[in-house]
Image (cartoon, rainbow, N blue to C red; front, side, top):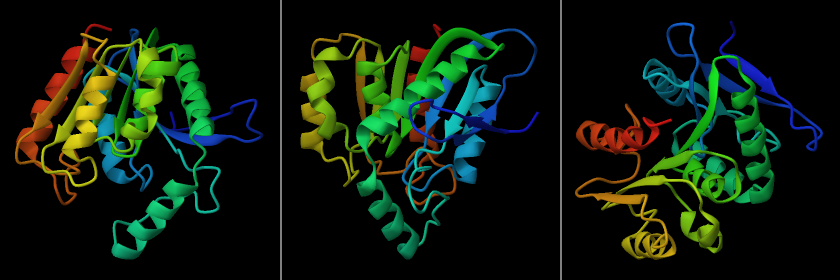
Length: 231
């Protein structure tokens, strides 16, 4: 089976690609939608998708930038980072939420899926995991060093799914005041875990990327998958 699928959102006028990874065995399992950073579905994201599949999840990592004039993977260079940030500023938030809805439905329709879907956002994807918990039919959501969640706190009152948001205390992209605002917006959800990891910065969950911290990554993963483990 190919590791890549084409997902077709009927209202969008196009299709987008997603990397898929299946758990071992033949039985049904919960599903996980993995939403990547601004750089796209890099090899490190494919590696995480494989890792999460090995943990027992039917996993998809979609290309969130398929509509853009530069839809491919951006290199982690100074020039690539500048292009990736520019692309991220061009997105339509509601369109991406619609694509997340399409991907959730595709996961739920897979024969290996038990009907339950969690969403995990990394960096840029964190905002859309939060919005999935507020707007979509998902059973849980989480994020590793999620960015721009503070821009979507108007959706805080409609968050209906359990959340596990993992931040680095020294992450300049998501400062303490934004984390405090997120915490306040989720005060109505006793099942919203917000963890700030001392001494860690952005990208703590991404092996081989500057900022990676294996101890923090392991603790953050444990916390998120403790939440997802009940699916």
